[in-house]
Image (cartoon, rainbow, N blue to C red; front, side, top):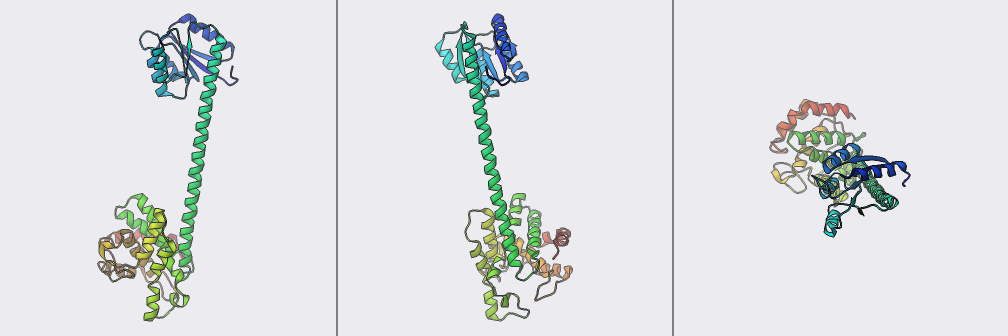
Length: 346
């Protein structure tokens, strides 16, 4: 007999057979439960949760086939073994179709043979459960590794964004602030949590193209010459090229924002001169968050604007620089915007 603790349920209307099975299996250390019919058997099964069930096919009321079918629905990994005196082959085949694991005929000539059948089915059930646990463990490992790869990808995105920002901001906190503000604005505009979180993770890469702009132009304290300005205007395309094509939704959005974050509602922006709703919605959100935080941040070439002046500038640009539908929503979330400003200070 198996060395592990075993719980066995026998469902049979033959009292003498049940007593014989109990005596034999209890001598082997098995805990035995009894039921005299199918309905009682299912109730005992629910309460006792046995490791294996012996079922007679011919019983009054609910017959063995119906019991087997119900057991298979409730617990397909619990072996059900038919112990029956019927010689009907069709009934035996039907029992297999309904989920029976093995078939022993009455009268039982050898209890040892029945014991062997029980052990065989229990060992098979244990193997199935172990394989299932192993499969689930592998799936968990795959999920963990995937999450680790995604976390690494996101860290790279954020750090590259901050690396670009360090070119003209000594702390690189601008990209953190404007990303969180972009997410707040997205939620205010009715975007789903999932899409807003994607925007939060993609927005830090908006200015990555500044890596390709010479310091003499990027950090120049005076006004740029027309030639220098043309060079500065190349950074959106440089950013999109750096990010490149990627199957990741976050990276695709990051490339799109990098390319379009200097487009303006009235079409006067660059590099493509897009206007209105031709500019991606996420970019229109990032544009407001980016400009407001840039205005209120100190740079080598300018002082930080007072918050009210920056708000006035955003409102003045409604319908020209900025999406006129988003500007009022941005003003509504100003307390949260300023809280983010205080949380991620330069």
